[in-house]
Amino acid sequence: MSTKVESARPTRFTAQHLRKEQDGRLYNDVQNDYALPADQEEAERLNSQHKALIILFGSLVPEPLKSSLLSQSSPRILDVGCGTGIWSLEVAQELPQARVTGVDLVSINPPNYPSNVKFEKRDILEDFPKGWEGSFDLVHARYLIAGIRDFSLLLSRLTRLLKPQGHLIIIEPRAQFYTNGADVRQVCPRTSRLIAVVQEAMDRLGIDPNPGKKVSAYLRENTEYQDVTAQTLDMPLSPRSDDPKLFQMGLAHLPNSLSLPGFPTIDSREKLVLPVWLIWATRK
Image: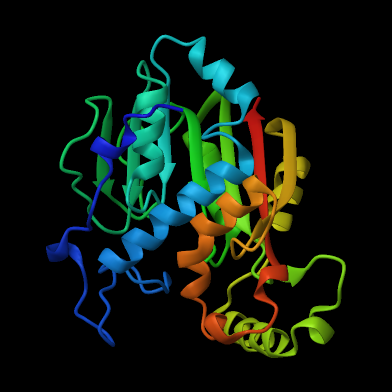
């Protein structure tokens, strides 16, 4: 991966494009379904989450898809729900021949970034700009669990954006962490109660706690796709491990873990992991 990303990393969301403050946090002004903030604290959390995910899966783009993109003279890439833009920026540097567009519900303005990347404030569920349908070689969407209520609708729309032989990447967590080799209710009873509260809240909001399973099934059953690949890996929630890779992942993910209600006080947190789906497919 390129080592130049630090100079191109965005540091903040654009304040004039945020809703009024709620409980000391700022939120997007486009749609109400997305439940998470859009402020500097959230930007820092998203960047640490990105780092942990890259360590977990080992790359920005799975190798078979990266090879396909490298073989093209000017592939077009769309990053849906780009957040701080960090994935867009790193991909634009790793694939300098590509044209990368990042879209999100808030505007972001990195202080400097490669000339082959641009950012737009856009709701992917609204009308597409002219010329977008059937124009992208890769569409990437990651951790949209908090903002998408109907993943089948989302996937049908993203499919429309892909060229024939274009690639789709979806990364989503299963929103229920657990302990390896033990019953979380016995090992971490307070954590188990927290999970139940979170599950109840997600049910009330209409949020699917395991969208990766639905995405994988949808793509496998959809005759417009081929070469569907899905894998689920466990993200450690803290750096308490003797394994260097697990330690680095847990350390990178720790700001996200600490944002969970009750995490600093839950018991045996070193045993907790979060399953994460990585799914990719190619449109016929």
